[in-house]
Length: 465
Image 1 (tube, rainbow, N blue to C red):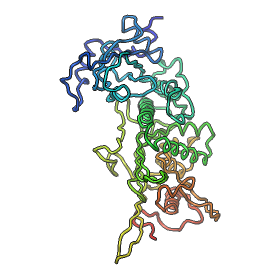
Image 2 (spheres, rainbow, N blue to C red):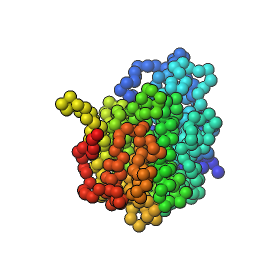
Image 3 (cartoon, one colour):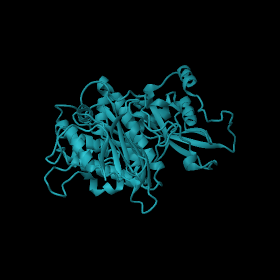
Image 4 (cartoon, rainbow, N blue to C red):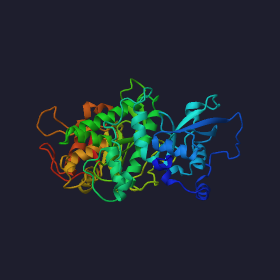
């Protein structure tokens, strides 16, 4: 069988004329780049590009005069797109169908090689891998998470991806549902449209999580906080009726995308500044949630969320919220963002006396809580949805950004009460556990004997002391 026949990647090949037209539309310098920089011996790095898998290797060999490796170059200081353009010219396959990255890393087109290789050319060529877009999750599983040099502890995914079906290209409209089912171990997924976008967006989110962990591996508290997220998600799911395998599938869909953590500068226990952005992918439907937590100072916390139903199509990449970006944090009411709750402790002075008060807002309605449950677990009637109470779906949303909340049962036992998971209320310093529990149960129509009767509070002061 010929190389061309065995390469799915080459099915996206265009003519030289079509690629020229594509290049005219897409190859535009960033506003910060100096377009006058020219290549010379002092700033040019030799690059070798080989294929990650058989598909990529076959495509390279068929387009490169029978050679297994492409020889291209890189002008120091430029971004990865400049290398991709050269590869496009050889493959005649637009770069939206593949990615370039050094082995054991995941890089984006706007990244530069300076982060790892410095600002001077190396004698030996830098080796890059060409990874087909439909194989990103397999690259992460087979290269990133199995690398002996990785600093990713623990490995993020519980379950490895399964190989795609052999007849994948013959499944027509069901191709991407089949791909997603294999890659993410879906649970009785719904039929219909939207799985192409889900498959592309979730692979992209896994790629960006791996990139974030690599780039922040030297930052204090990052892996510790990611571990807190994993522990919180595990604990929430353990309280449901999901099987162990189902819990792992759900947990694998929780993908942090941005994280910044600072402690109080003392013993490192208290968190003085936390910003987290995560995505949760449903294992049952082509849907997902964005979740954002901000804790700018002691006694203040806000959790926002946004629903994507269905996931945007491939190519319309979901924006990653960049921590401390010039655009600022997400805003309630803009671009689909909604507030789950917000708490802020204040110490106003009245008549020369300081009084601690807490301003709190609970915005999640019963209908919105039910929507979160449906988006994550398939909706009424789905076997998975039946095993997860609505209040646990909301707690999973909180846990995805590291806020582990445990609900008491109202048994009367002093130890059985609403609290931050593992007794870590002192870490957050909000002193509103009872208020959060009462609001959550009332919203999800699951009150306990200890809850006070009355309507859900939508704002105002939740307490003073």
